[in-house]
Every structure is written in C-alpha cells, then in structure tokens.
Length: 156
Image (cartoon, rainbow, N blue to C red):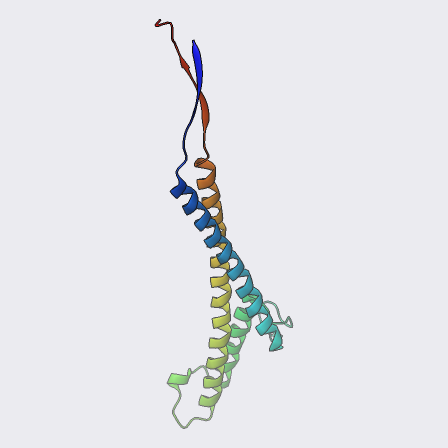
C-alpha cells in the first residue's frame, strides 16, 4: 500500500471576494460608529433638555435617539396645547398660533431626522458586522484542505 497526500486547491476568487466583503463590512462598521457619535455630538452641542413633563427622560440632555424622540413628542404635545389641538394645516392663515405650530413642526422634524440618522448608523454597523462574519466564514470554508488517499498497489 502506498499513502499519498492530496491537497485541495482553494479558489483565489473566493478568497478575494471574502476579503472584499470583510473590508466592506469593516467600513460600514466604522461609518456607523462615526455617524452615531457625530449625530450625538451635534445634538449635545445644541444643549437641548427633555422637558420636565415628558413621559420619560424628563430633565435629561438630548444626546441619543430615545431622548430626541421623547423631546419631539413633548414638542408636539405643547404645540397642540398652544393651538387648541389644531395642526398647522388646520389653523387659519391669519391665526397667530400658526407660527407656533410651524416652529414646533420644524423642531420635531429636526429631532426625528436625528432619530432616523441614529437608526441608519445602527443598521450600517449591523450590516457591517454581518458582512465581516460572512467574509470570515468564506475564508474558513475556502481554506485548503489536506487529506490522505490510500492507494492499494497490490491490486487487492
């Protein structure tokens, strides 16, 4: 009997693809982290505090998605109180409360935009992590395998 070692050749294309996927994933993770902290810092620079009559986070600084969302809800509540429960579109054009409704609408839109930015940052980081794991799995699966083949040279 003769024992021979046979090495399976790995595909260079799969390895290149795996590395590209890992790099893309890492870039998404970095971008997500950068975006999260950038939006958080921008909100912190505005020195916004969640109103004391908010359901949650009253008195806390608006620096994240939950506090931004809560402050937007409080602004909506206050605007509706100031306009008698009417929205900007429902108020007459000469109603002085219309300016309050308009300002509240702009403020809420800005806060909701930051909430969306936090969500996109989190999604980018999550997709990036998934890509890194997929790329790593491809590299692992594509490793050259070594195994032995036994050849019976005695014909039996």
